[in-house]
Length: 114
View 1: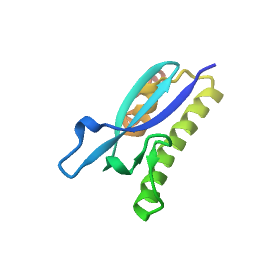
View 2: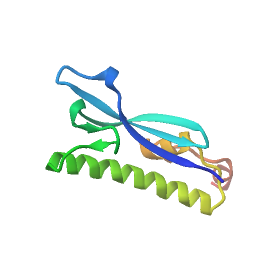
View 3: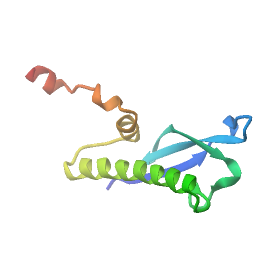
């Protein structure tokens, strides 16, 4: 049985002059990790370390939290499809799906089929 864990966190070492830190995503599959930036950032005091989301109910918080939820849902969908098809999937594979790199990968058999 494979195990997927998705975690959002602030990379405080990259906080800018405005006090905003980038939000990073950590994908863990069977103990193997892959990390990437979500392309979003927030003020560190607005971040809830318990829920790994923005605090509050402002429109900005809702929009950003919805964005993070969509990323997590997409990862879960891709992961579950791979499980149903009995394919091995790694944290790096899931990261590639989010970053769009998986579109450029060609498997050997489709290349021969062409």
